[in-house]
Length: 319
Ligand code: ACO
Image 1 (tube, rainbow, N blue to C red):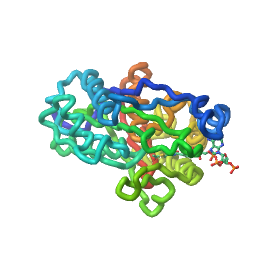
Image 2: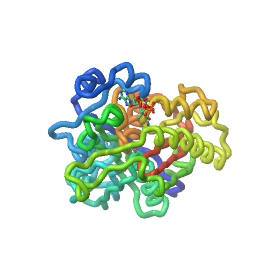
Image 3: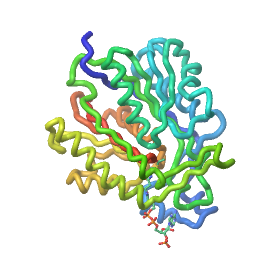
Image 4: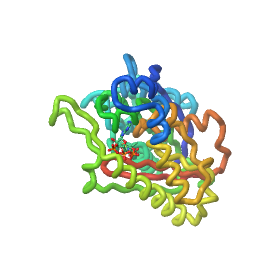
């Protein structure tokens, strides 16, 4: 088969069992269910427990994506895990996934680009397939953010949740079904607005965020990169059927849709149930939409993430 591009051939996800509601958080910080719902759209999130480390969730999501793609783990050439909350410093979570799945041929590595991690990993996987270096790649976004959240900081602890999402990327001989383009970037000079100290710097590694600055950045950058992708590919925004955005805050999605003059119906959401799962949010959403059967063959969609770094990444594809 001639490889013209790469395409998603399977999806999977894994969420911890424990549900943490806004009502429970109300009991230990000065907040309310009404405030959280109104300012973020989040109602509950999942919190990882025993047997649900980042690598274990990643392996569960990966296994489901392989089953969906109907390929065996030994077929995988690469496993890339995007995470800023890996299970340990070494081995990488990708190596732990390899061991759990028995993907003996795969080259394994983790990448960290915070909430844009899945998009950056997808771009690397796409490039590897197009360069002929790989046939099948497992791309996973997985996080265990509850372990690095300061549960006394009401500005951040309400936002995040744990989980993992995965896709299997394979070669495609037609641009009718596959990835068409990427638009990604980083701005390290503005990294201070969203940080997590490493355990070398401090015993407790807490996530810290200037929420308003991240909010303003997202509301400007998301419509900008979507417009660049559409224009470069000679598509009107209305010709793109679905916009799968990083699930950070319902108001960010609403503002992006408004700036692009698009109906919010094209922006599927699940942040009400899972909160912000960083690198995992887009592949979890993609898997849910696939399982609901809402995507039709040949439909166009844009996946777009943004977050710490600062970083941003988006991908235009034909389903
Ligand atoms: N409950 C009640 N009040 C709160 C809470 C809370 N949980 N959090 C903040 N407040 C208060 C503030 O203290 C402030 O009070 P003040 O006016 O008396 O000072 C007031 O609410 C308004 O605070 P803002 O920060 O202006 O609230 P805002 O509407 O901006 O919402 C939020 C805050 C939800 C954090 C928002 O800024 C946001 O979602 N930002 C983006 C975060 C994000 O998307 N991160 C993604 C990247 S994450 C990654 O890459 C790992």
